Length: 104
Image 1 (cartoon, rainbow, N blue to C red):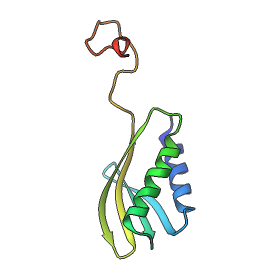
Image 2: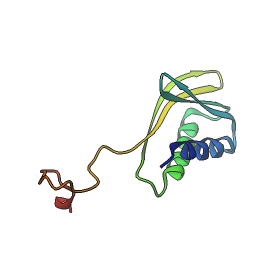
Image 3: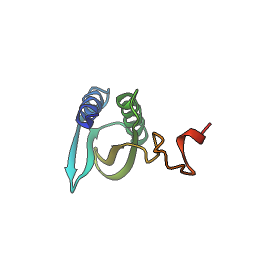
């Protein structure tokens, strides 16, 4: 699974949202930050981020995490990442207590 495709889909659709003038992702020390310039409220921006990240992840085993970082006038910065959940996805045959076969 290529996360670049998911990031591209997410950012392109975020840019097209009404009220969002600019959206881009910048990587700093391996951590992705979303820079959004908008006249919308912080709650509306966070709703848009959740909506488009959910649509970008649809059909894939991914999760997203968004944390507000800072705000300057009409520029909002969020730490946002897509990640694979930390859970077993197959049986390894070692009779583990948390085996996927034992889940209901």
